[in-house]
Image (cartoon, rainbow, N blue to C red; front, side, top):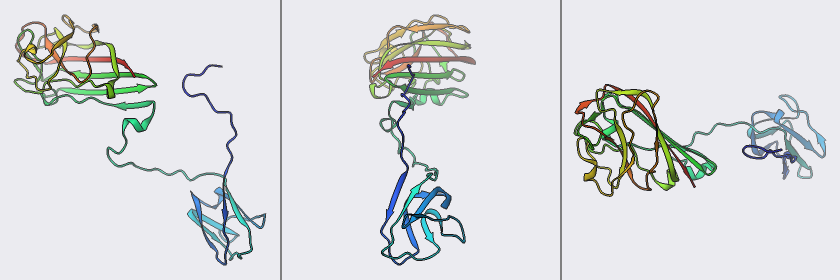
Length: 266
């Protein structure tokens, strides 16, 4: 039958074993850590030993302790019946997307002209499932400002008002996207269009056309609750994205929540 995702294995998996080089000692080191002696079966001269304190052996971690010394002529081996489950916390930023295989989650970073707005919310995620990338940008516009028609939206008179940079490594080759309005914009201009340009330095109240190689991605019209707008012109690789006013409204946003999504491929 067909499966979504990895095909379940039907192969038998054998237990791990360890052969010991014996000597006149009662202390040995296991190759796999265990939580206690019941997770291994120990054999000396092909006779299974009784685990437990006061019996033939105890074990914890990688330490195996026998109740009596072995001889150099003895044969000894163990079968690992279970592995100790251990938690390892990787160091900060030590895990990269390339290390996570076909399923990764990363994020975009907006400029300070977006993230420093009072009560403004910016969150993003980029999920890669197989060969498909899904980029999401969630924005609460509260605290940002709009100005003249064709001007960049952001914290009033603040540079770096971009909402993130698209790259092939993080977002794949973007085919298209959409905007969903979850709360109607209020205060500032409700006609919010998306553009991209070469620079990350675009300033609120400055014309988007003042940036280099600027391209309009969509013409949203006035957004209202439940509005869904297609993005027919996807952002090119290495470009910075901006929200731009479609009409002249010089005011701060007091409400407005939008979700911007892009879909790309490897």
